[in-house]
Amino acid sequence: MTVAERVRETIMSAQGSTAARKLFGIELPEPIAKVARKIEGTAQKAIVEERSNVVEPAPVVGYFDDQGTPRLAVSKGAEPALEDIAVELVRLVFRNGRFEKNMPFAEMRHEANRRLCRRLYRIIESEVVFPEAEGLDVRARNRTLERMRAAFLDPLQQGRYRPDEAGPARVREGVLDALELTIAEHDARAAERHMEAIAAADPEIARALGMLYTVVKNHRPFEDDGRVRAAYYLAVPFLFDARRPGQAPPRR
Image 1 (tube, rainbow, N blue to C red):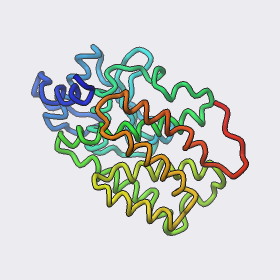
Image 2: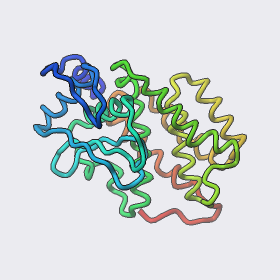
Image 3: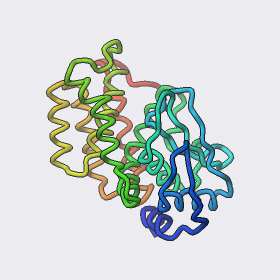
């Protein structure tokens, strides 16, 4: 059974109480509540809700801590929506109890690089997570598209994207924003239109985006975590190639 099949089986077959379940004050529809109960049953631990004191790469971030406890962390200043919670619950099923410290991005020694790689891995993971989350009748892709248009594409086209940040840091963050936007599109032509708009506004971001998107496209379909890991390891060098000409690559 592939990981994607296991996710579907969890969504379809999880059993438990039909009592109303809430996370972050949001009542979960029964299909999503079943997934939450299944995660807790497998981990033998309750899902911990927490408010992060840092800005996370998404409104909600799901992970397993060093004790195997499933956690959902709301980014500093964010207000979670049902779609955000559903996506992260599916992510927890997909990771199947794998500790955050054992994820591929944890190999990066430097915190800033590890943060970038963590987000890259999560974006590639969405190739599995989005379709399964939408099977729970939530608008997972649309939620991400709306968020990334407002946070990235519109400011980029208006010349307001990270105006006080220069050099490779801005480009790398921009590449990840751009990749999250394009991967959220179900239609390939719509993704291409986004890439064309990004290229018109910022060719440097678009250059690195083209390489990362090609890696993802060439690994489709994503049916297990092996495909996600393979795409991630190929994509990492292209992410860190987004730097000023002649600048040395970062230390791992």
